[in-house]
Image (cartoon, rainbow, N blue to C red; front, side, top):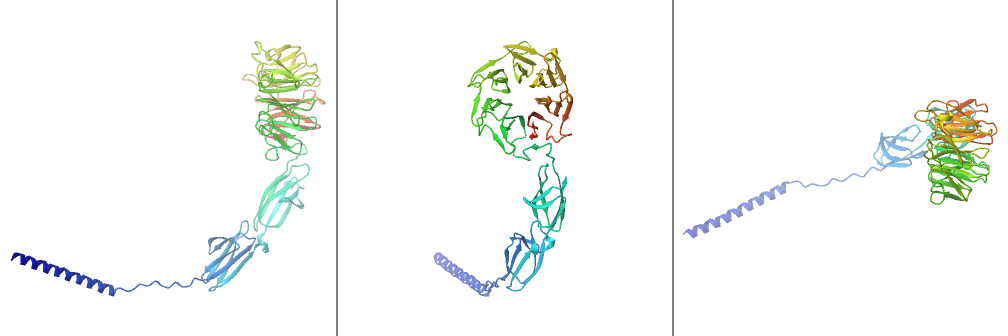
Length: 490
């Protein structure tokens, strides 16, 4: 009985589930029938309107209704709807130009802007020079006009304006011309009838940091620098000799001298170099009897024998044989030679870094010190001999004594104290014809005439490019001046 009842219940449950499934299916079908069918709308055909835009000059930026299109003329704006468009062209240095374009359906319009046909697009230049009368060049082309002058109707752009006047250095500026604008430009021309400077900014010279200068028998100027080696100047071209392209042992030049055979002798911190115009010969402590590699002074005696001063003694050298000298005493703890001169009697005079002055003759040394001889200090930077066989010395200051200049006439020293207490005396050049002494200092040039009357030249009362003078020489009627920081002057 129980089994019959369970069978009946199971059968009825299956029937009930089947009925529910049929009902749900019917509902889904009804809902599905009631839902609308969705369809993708048909896209209208794109507008085919075009504006072709060009300009003279080309390269103008195209703006459409105030928006930068990122396009440059010549170019086209495409797929435009029928409408009114404001087209603006922007070209550097020119005035903006705007045009309204009425574009019909699928129309193709041409727009061309000729800047050059519009007089308002040009600008004007007013050019002055001090002094007046300079020839005017624009982009290296002569205008056959002189300053002061006004140039009307100049095409906008950036121009290189050059001014040329006899006895004055050419001057060049960048002159900007813009539409409907008048601009004034003025230059002060540098007088080169008396002073001329050669710097890295205005010439092909390779350094402004010059240490020494000599002129050889052919009139070639040889210039030492502290940073790029040796410079040759034939008054047309500057040629650089350095450790990369020559036999020079260092890019720092301490001193220069020219022999009777026109060889150039070069003192550096890395030894002695001799250059004959084609061949380099290098001498140092490893391959010769040079007493020290730091060569500070070179000179020649009456016979043409070279004398070389170093940080540790001095030597003579005839190109083959060396003779080395050194000296020490209570006063001279060691011989650091900073200056050399040979007088008319072939006596050698040596200036030391800190101990005073020595003379050498026939293997006899004589000491001269400041406290006994009354010259400024024991620190000597240069030595020269004048036409009267007086020996001139330049003295550097010490912590307690001011630097200056002195000369020895064979009996006594006479001293001078040019400039201010902070002056540094770097060198001496003596003109053999006039007996004028030209003193290189950090406060310009000091000249003593034959009567030892002092005259000074600096960048306040002359056109010297720098007051820091290291070396002076003369060739013909022209003085050549090596400055530290201001390049070469003449």
